[in-house]
Image (cartoon, rainbow, N blue to C red; front, side, top):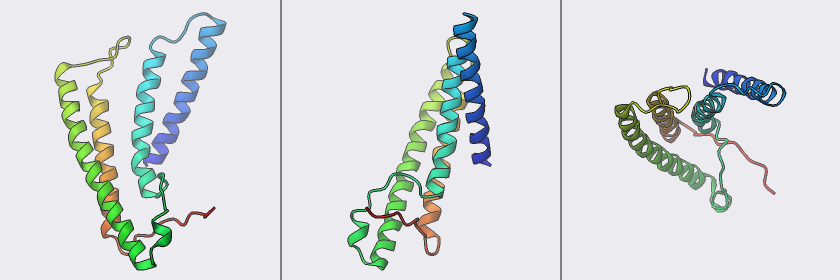
Length: 152
């Protein structure tokens, strides 16, 4: 569901950018608040993709330690790394939630369209928490498969 939502957001962002560029350069009338909408859509797109990337094990990895470990030790190492990632994500969730509460209490909005920013920061915190849950699941799931990358 997150993947479909992210795809739709990306498409809408492309349409908005195209329309804004056409309106700006051909009609000399840019879309009012187009930049703000693009910023907020990009925020949602990035944070909606975070749990998807972690679930698919498509994040950036450095496997120089994995290569020298025997298979059982490699599985343990991968589980430890997922636990570390989960802990970091839960810490970030806590910090971003605090920031979201502060922003919401100020009723902070964007400059042009006056869109409330607080819900977007809460969304960030929720997606970071979901990413932490994905890593936590990978710690305890049997086998914890990891995508095999081509070695170069």
